[in-house]
Structure formats: structure tokens, C-alpha cells
Length: 88
Image 1 (cartoon, rainbow, N blue to C red):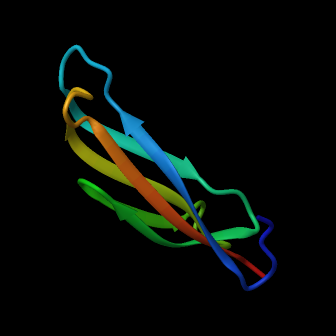
Image 2: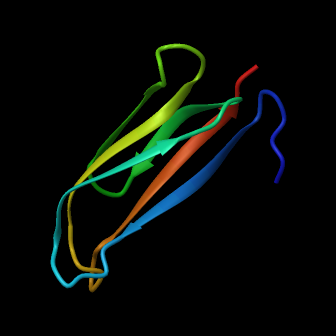
Image 3: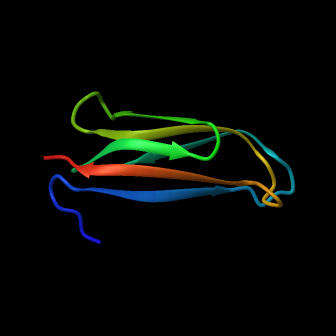
């Protein structure tokens, strides 16, 4: 769906470990282009922060520290849901 000024939307990034070993110290970085502003992040494991790139404009850099990601069976899948607004 299209977003208009003042509206919000959510998209997901799925981080998967296909193996054969656990992934240690796994991180994820996503840069959201202008005119979108990150207003929230939820994650199934670990923690995330969102900040401005270069210290100006909307908050548009999402960094997540997922820690250890197990092999896909039975875990190994981490959902990162990012909520954005159109920055006006």
C-alpha cells in the first residue's frame, strides 16, 4: 500500500541462519531513505536502536544486535519489524 504524509507503515526483515553452526555476535543494519522516519522497532531476540544518519533529518538508521542466532532448525529465525512514518 502507498503511504501518504502523516501515515505510518511497517515492514519486516527476517534474519535466518542456515547453518551448519550457530552465528555469534550477529548484527543487522538497515538505512531507511528520506522521507521516511523510523518511529519504532520490535524484535524477536536481542535489542535495536534507531538514530539519525549524520545527526540531521529524520531518524533513519536501524541497528540491531541479535546476539547468537541458532541454526534454522528449530530456531535460527529472527524477525525485525520496523515502523516508519513519512517525514514532512
